[in-house]
Image (cartoon, rainbow, N blue to C red):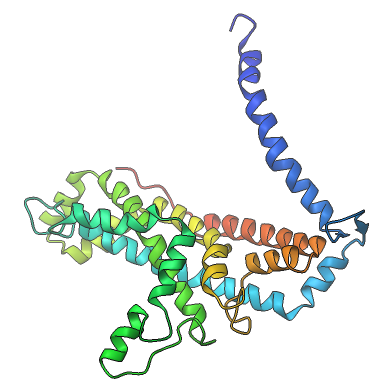
Length: 301
């Protein structure tokens, strides 16, 4: 500090900023440049301007992948946040024990159960779900159906069911984290607020919609952005669970899978990078719009 405050601050910032520029900003710039070139991974890259983007926007497979990402973007945050809020409320406020802040019986055990999927790597979850979704009597779900005399269901091989089956896995895998996140947020709400609402005759339903949700709005907003970003990815689950990387017949393909296929199967790295650039701007636009549209005045307590 003897040389002044600003040299002291710059001295601490120069190393992390240099690392960030080297490993984040520079790759972004190189990706934007590669998206304007035709390159098969070997030799010199040929500059073609916006040719990759023109090809991209005229490709029906790209728009199919975008539509699937859009469906996941709508369903995943809505369902995961709704389930996470309900479960977190039950674990923290929904019980009938001593005091208004009592959770349901066994709430500590349920917290562990809900969070358990977060402890597993995503490919492991996908492999486990493959066993559950097997299209014969050896699958967990179809085994039960066969026992009741029903026909087995091809969850991952039926084009009409495959995407929804994968969305179900994404929701199941995400819920546990948001139960913990919302529980932490509810734990920071003062007891006085709940006690005052109870004295005014508020029911548990009223406590949920009129007290808990408004006071957790900032946390819900962040969760929505995180889940939206996850919806634009979904690569690992789709890549492992789907038939032939996005099948059957492209019914489960998403942008991340198309980027992978075009880069590492077709060796069209410039085209795949152009798709990645589009995904970058779509994700950035979604995050900015979500934060803008859901912005509300902060409630102090």
